[in-house]
Length: 196
Ligand SMILES: Nc1nc2c(c(=O)[nH]1)N[C@H]1C(S)=C(S)[C@@H](COP(=O)(O)O)O[C@H]1N2
Ligand SMILES: [Mo]
Image (cartoon, rainbow, N blue to C red; front, side):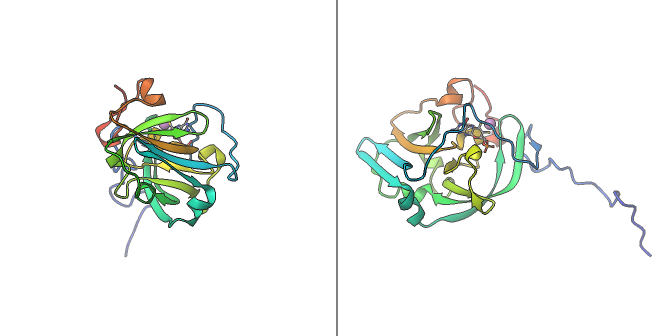
């Protein structure tokens, strides 16, 4: 005969045990924006990659015509919330950077609305970053970065620029918006690279 008291079935799993240090699990999806949500018509939308050798541009239709991937990832905000198993669909940066010629190692990400953030190029490639346009099987909501945002889940979520507009190759690292305001240049949540 088995007897199990509801709520006591052995050792309780700590809901925070698989989270980076200092993070707390959330189940909602907080919105964190430094300014107003820009209104972007996909008819006018454009994505660019600029390097010392030139500029490449994609329209919304160009992006939709590229092979997309479904991505499930944990996300970690520097303000201490983490959300596990978020589901996205988008184009891997490997495909966008495939024909880009550059000797530079650093990237400034630019957003509609003026937000910027810096990421080393090698952390955007090899299946580590996507330009995402769906969340949970639905078109990405404007407040969460729609029509398209960058996602770089292995870094703190401020690196995942909403309303992404383009990527600029840089010879040396330089701080973006939050990085100029004290956030870490790199931002690895497992190393707690929050501020500098
Ligand atoms: N363009 C832009 N991207 C941004 C931000 C922003 O203010 N503007 N905030 C960043 C921060 S601090 C976080 S935590 C995430 C929040 O994304 P969410 O609002 O979809 O949760 O977006 C990041 N990308
Ligand atoms: Mo954040």
